[in-house]
Amino acid sequence: MTLFSLNSLVRRAVEQSLPERYWVVGEISELRETAAGHCYMELVQRDEVTGELIAKARGTVWQRIYSLLLPYFYEETGSRLVPGMNVLLQVKPSFHEQYGYNLEVCDIEPSYTVGETARRRRLVINRLEKEGVINLNKELEMPLLPQRIAVISSSHAAGYGDFCDQLARNKYGFDFCTHLFPAPMQGNGVEQGIISALDSIAESIELWDAVVIIRGGGATSELSCFDTYDLANNCAQFPLPIITGIGHQRDESVLDIVAHTSVKTPTAAAEFLIHLMLEQLEKVNASMQGIVAAARNRIDSAGRRLQSAVERLPVVVALFMQEQHHRLNLLQKSIEASKPEHILAMGYSITRKGGKVVSSLDGLSPGDEVVTQVSGGEFKSVVK
Image (cartoon, rainbow, N blue to C red; front, top):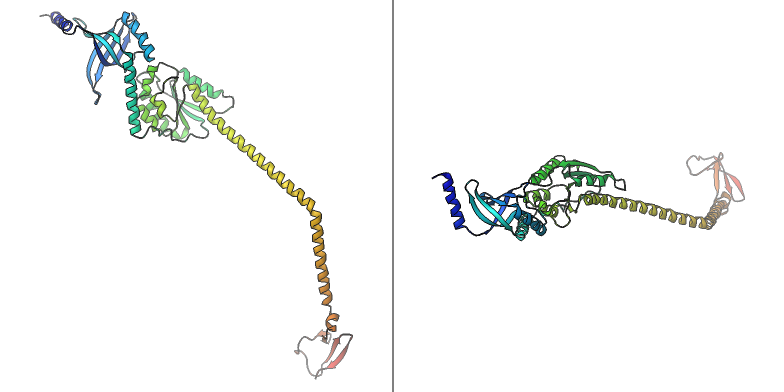
């Protein structure tokens, strides 16, 4: 038997034993569109626990079917068919002597893909919640003046240019220092690219106030790369506040959920930073106005006290002068009362020897002549 003969037997066996169309669940691992409008894909199935590949088959969507399925799928899901997507396909098994086993795709059920994407996303969110990390980045305190910004984006993304231009042209004249840490923003390399960029930022973390992850607009399907556990876990536990603006209006990715702040577009991310700066400027201006007002109040209060003191000064001075005059009168009377003649009139006397006052018996000897002064005159005596 020739190989062709054997393959022909296999083909007939497949056609006879599998004559119907079957709905099959699989993951698109590869996808290629031809110039003629056909689509060739590789479908795989992985073990739910280990993730190991357990089944694989080639699928073909001919142009007449693909031209109908593609717009229908996009309208229902908001995305194109891309690798990594789980799909529910209606297929017809076939075997060709030359090309081997193949699944001819006849139809697709978009609602399955939408539900499967949501299910996988929910599993990631539940895991982050169970591990207690989902809100860690939100709990970080945003710097008062976030001016040193580490940007994770594609260097060629229009969103990156819009972000930088918005910061540079802000009407308040705020200065921002930005540095790009390039990473792919679509495709299979997004997760590892962003994680590597975060690792690079962490090496010089003292130089940055916040991290901004931005990209331009895109299909909803392209957001699936922002729903992975490893990416969300790294961002949730990053020690700097993360701001996301990954260019979608309707949907929220897991990365948006774990980020400190999530906005819709790169331009909105720039506006958020400008707004934070403006808030601090307004607080400074309010404080300055408060200081000026307080100073004016104190000056006005001091002026009123001074004016009151000036008005009271004549009365105070008059009272002071009256009090001092009364004290002088008292002192004068005290001085008058202390004069020797007044004291002598009270019966006291002053005895002198040789012109010096005798205050004790010391220094007196019998025969000494002393002079005693009394009220009205003096007399001499001889000490015995």
